[in-house]
Image 1: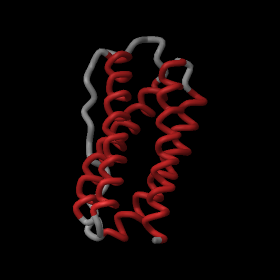
Image 2: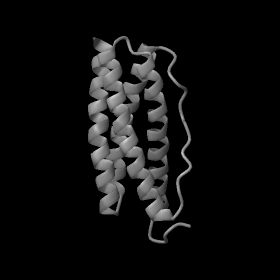
Image 3: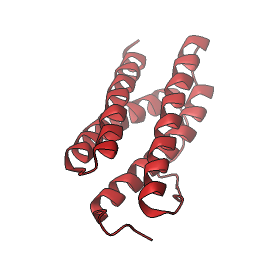
Length: 136
């Protein structure tokens, strides 16, 4: 049951964010197992913790607006090699940053806009780490 004043686009943005974060949680768990050393594994698991926090925040916003829990879906294949997984992660984090910026600008609900803005800063930071992993 959707609250009448909630634009369908905002719910679509939240659903996309929920699915993306849910996928990242699982993807980074697998990627950490492929890491070449403990330091890299630790950093990937820290990034995964951020994604879990984002997932919970977006899921809470979705439930507040709809009265229903989200039904998250994994939207990407899991990594089979470290380098390919890091390349995928870098591109995904960059695209997610842009998507979250757009969602924040278009949201008419300040709290949701803030969620997207805050998550976008983390996503950009994650992209920098994945770029570091690609080049080191």
